[in-house]
Length: 131
Image (cartoon, rainbow, N blue to C red; front, side, top):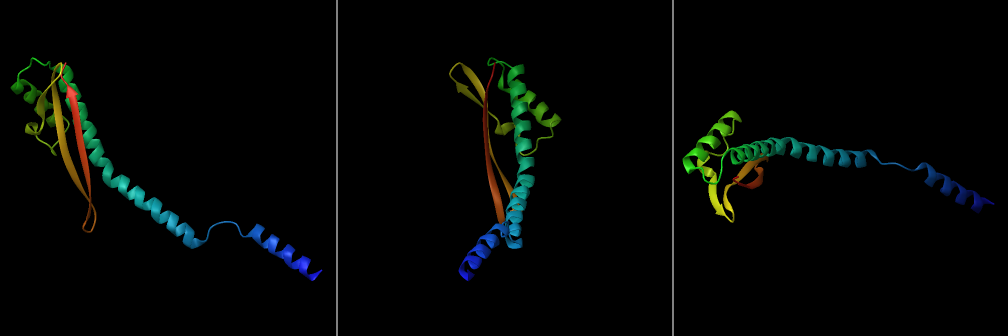
């Protein structure tokens, strides 16, 4: 009878021992906070990239493949000025020949300091065909 009681107590203890410990919760919270910190640090770089991309799309819609290089650079300069883009310059935007016409092409890196001497390098590139 004594053996059955011990077996019953073990089973009952296992039923009541569910859940995580405080150390487990701390580890989970540290991981979640780390990824939230990364998102907060990287979000501005991606927002700036999408602003650059929308500027190039706007210029490509407004200009044609027969437009001169100086006209296209003037349009890009205006868009960059309005959108307050200063990570790249107008000269960084290349006008490439592609099959069927020309395209605006940009490729740049953005180095973001995370903490101490640890940084993240984010590489962006976009090609937008001219109409």
